[in-house]
Length: 593
Image (cartoon, rainbow, N blue to C red; front, side, top):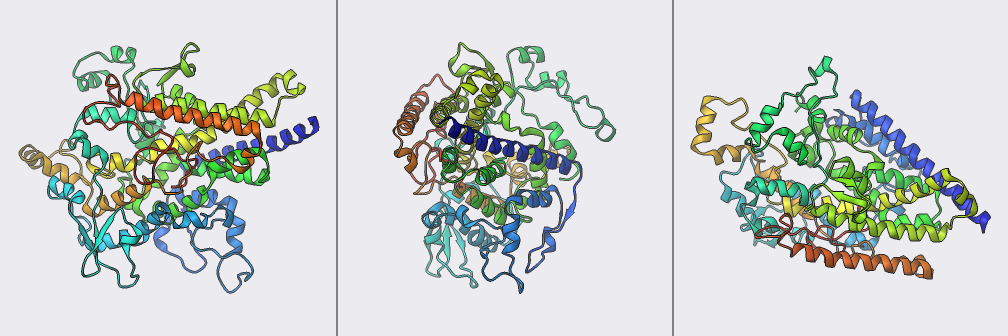
């Protein structure tokens, strides 16, 4: 028994060391890429498209992130010299067969829908909306997207029934065989049409909206960039300006003492002023586990449900979302620098040890350690829906991982007498908990509310096409703004084609497929065979069902203003289970959409 434990520990030690090396190497590469942009040619075996030669970090990152698949990819290159016995690629991004979607997954709604939006619907939208820069003439025209239909001409080159491919978006087919597109009304707009216009709602959404990870306590604003290039590190945002913005309700010192918060990316964005984080890391760790652990290894079996389909969904995104000239570059403010900025942001802001929810909250100043409080933390803002629900989910995952690991790796006397090994053993369980949390709870919190909060794009516009009149204003612009301010705002909003393309994609990304596998829902066959593991998993499932009840109780508590009240979208993104479709709830095992 002791020898067997020793062999398991040795194998697992190798895996952890590999993970650490992958992360360190990734950080070094990203650091280098953030300092110098390179011209990289991504050239396929059959053709070369000069449009994707970009002075950005993405081309180099593309090479680095695909390192795990490089050998298989080159073996499968099409051409006269290709090996006829080798596996053939079905698309421009190689995915090993055992990482591709299953036959059941291939025919389910969400995955096919994303492909159909990227390859069929978006081109037809571009045909239907002839003027690419045409904006919305009035707000009622935006509302009409949810009440009237857009006619999409049936393409002659690739005929097909869009209604069967995208039943939620395409409502009917006209007599001329053209598809008729109409968007579902997002829940936020359905509850309160004018919520997006209020500052209070904007603030509420930083705690219970699309991205509850960005708010942090920060002061003073002092740049760490090279002053030789970017000037004085002292911010022009002075205490006087801050007090003017908060209308002298309190001084800056009083605001700091009462823990008021800022949204701040000044160092991150400053180098990009003149030019214009879910799944790649976890794929690298997934590859490390695949290389070091057999399919029968207990740790592999623990992690496998949470990495299922990650490589396939990444490949799909690279083909149509984050590719050169794709939707992200054409419909988001940073344009062709979007992926470069993402790589720099990852380099500066992402640390795996800070991905654990308690560590993340403490790092952002949103919580302080308090052994007397539940979860060992005291939240800086008590009514923080994401943190309150997330900590319960985190604790449930942590307990499940601890029960599982302790069963397969009972601590022998060597571990009991070696303090360094004991510390390492605790860290292993934290690493596993963090991996599972990041691919389940973290992803659910930022993914499945996308259509709910951004489907009505004035609430979360992806691009500003003009400066607002208050930025370098001319007398004529100010006069127009004072006469009819909504006209200037509509000119600033995304164009019709930009808005509808993004709305269609957000609708699909927010969708749960009929065969979605939710955290704590399905017992793996190997767990069923082991009474101790089965009992631990049943306990885990019970805690998740209790979490659903707790969230319902909180959403009915009118004292919690950030999740309950008239017209307020209730916070349900971390409710573990969901029905198929766009529900604004449900925590799948992994990043499969």
